Image (cartoon, rainbow, N blue to C red; front, side, top):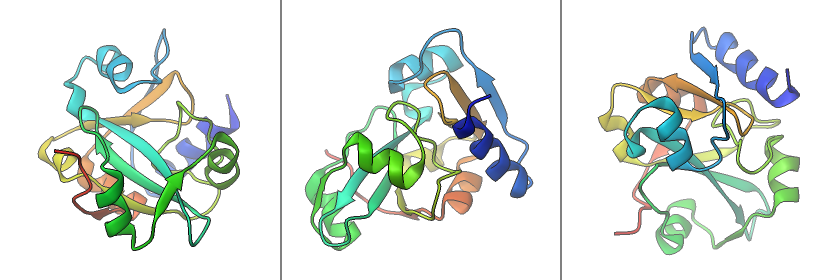
Length: 157
């Protein structure tokens, strides 16, 4: 079992969340791949989008519904600072995850997070579990609490 998957399992267990982590036969790097694998709506996939705060140099997490896109201007406004592209090195260093498997929990260090309100419309959503082939089902309210995400409007319309 990968270190990333172990961290996600440990974070969920520490919070007493019995999440259904599944290994998929194919990759779940994209929201569509994950939705197809989970057999759910595209918007039931919680995408983990990471930006780099240009003032703080810290990774900032935006959890968005699978069919939505993050509006960089709105995201900057809710983060309170200009945002730039987070490269793979920054993402790995600050979250411990590789692109395509960034989980919303189990980061190496606490991370500032924001959540798309669309995710809260579902009874169950699916998120990456630390690898490109593992996803887990969770109540979106529980995920919001575990990730410390603030619900905000950062979606492109």
